[in-house]
Length: 432
View (cartoon, rainbow, N blue to C red):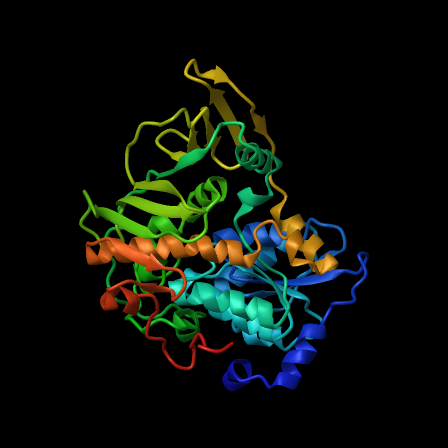
């Protein structure tokens, strides 16, 4: 089964590409949710709440998670669906059209590649990749197998934020030369947890997947996996990727030329490996013009900045864009406001929620990747910024990025960290 998904013949690949390409707009799209943790609940809620969309299966390595989801379905008057631990059983089912991936970060790319090879469209949570190499491979798979693949960057589907970006591109605030993203979330210590037996009903080998096998501890498992390099990318790649993506989108840039990050883990003596405080700087060359992007992660008590109100006291999540004739603020995910001139005269503003899941289904029906608001190439490019910043932090030096060769100029050590040593047989292939 493993070999099958890594080494599909060209004939099989052609057949996979033909799946669902002739579906009519009224056909039911059958979606399987992979990963039944906190974020997966939003996926399940979306697919069970849309007309002509059906939840087909639930996949999770922890039986208790899948059972909890089945209970939620039944309490809502919905029929139960099949549950399983291995995504490959879903990929074998020709009646399933798409997979909705809400697993830990280290699984996102490989599961997406497998799904593309099996002829499924994919909605994959952010960050779509765990390292820079995976950002390249996930796009290659989407292109080779002609799949609709969307990263879960919901803000891309907010009419308010789309309007904000359009106004900046139109020059309403003059040339935008600097964008700033903030990720201030009040996160307490995770403490220290001992090694213990794997809980009953958990397939820990499948959960570990491409990562090295570590002794089981609760801190390396549900949710706290975010704070370990094997499986997560810190808060920069957890909450921060949303604002990184918005900052790059509004600035109108692609690859950076220079990346530098400093920070550390402050206050807490616990199991966490990733920094809880991080300052990142990115330089870009946009058609001969220099542009800059700043990003800050903060983990504890914090004031609000730039008028961004935050989700709750102590949290500040948003972006600011600075132009020659004014500045624009994005507050959380679906709201923007702006100021013009030296007198800070109030400018355009708007608040309107996103329709990101609906956007994915529309593209599945149209078969046009241009219809996707967060098409996988855009998502993967923003993830590159996250990964380069984390490498800069871990090495303690500035990286000079070469987008033509996808290497760090003159830095073999940094270039080696663009990928990882994969645990067989869960290997992200060099050739998809």
